[in-house]
Image (cartoon, rainbow, N blue to C red):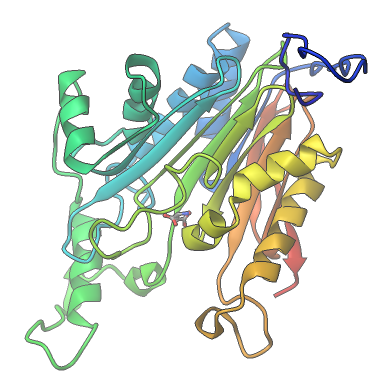
Amino acid sequence: MMLGSGCLVAPKSGSAAAPAVLRTPKHPVVVASANGHPACVQTALEKILAGTPAIDAVVAGVTLVEDDPNDHSVGLGGLPNEDGEVELDASVMDGKSGLAGAVCSLRRIKNPSQVALAVMRYTDHVLLSGEGARAFARAHGFVEQELLTPEAREIWLYWKSTMSDKDDWLPKTGKDVPANVKAFFGITGTINCCAVDRDGNLAGVTTTSGLAFKIPGRVGDSPLIGAGLFVDNGVGAAGSTGRGEANIVTAGSHTVVEFMRAGKHPKDACLAACKRIVESTRAPHLLRADGKPDFNVNYYAVDRQGRYGGAALFDGGSFAVCDVKGPRTEKLEGLFDR
Ligand code: ASP
């Protein structure tokens, strides 16, 4: 048994070391990626203060963003795969029970975070994929709908028609093409939200439409426990946004939690996980001319004591936080200036 794991069962034999004294937070804290400001973090905190379990509170928070057609990184209005189908990934992890649930490549259901919660609660599994995940969601009363909003369709059509001048797709011109359409090319997007309640119980959720215009069936880090999300009730909770592939091969969120277990402040644990990504990124196509990664990854973390922080490979980002002082954004610590 590792000290600080929150386990109350004594080891069979061996170390006579006294169990670590776990301090609980003075007040609940919710952190999220920047798109969680202010509604997601505020809603989650209010629910926790009202006595809702942290896991339900964070899912309620991200549901608001999944439902927002103007956020093109998750749920309804999320950017589709290369065939124009919105495919969603999500995971939840509950520190108190030690259980997790997840779905990947889920189509036509706008709240994958709620389906992930149902997987956690109503199955003996962690991850359901594709058609199986959709059938499970339907069985639990989730309603199917078209997730590709008119604006997301225009962005996708513009991407498709400008990919090559050797095919027969011609770009539309004029008012149909959103002015900011190019801003969506090559971007990713996700919402992660983690919380600690007054008793020191931790929970987290990560939900996404994944990489815009991905190969159908591509699964990112968000639904993978240990990559896009990890929670240990004795230590802390961490989640991630950004290039999922880099996070998968370094088990990024698990790495953050392990650095917190070793005693690091959440912000420093996030920075240490960023360094791990830099060390493990060696493939030439992932490196810029100056040798730094040509992508970004962001981490967000909160520990059992209520300390929180976030970091990214590159400076310039922010994250959302809400505690008794109210919702606000704070700076993500960057490993590199640019
Ligand atoms: N991490 C997500 C993925 O790779 C995308 C993102 O957060 O931007 O699917």
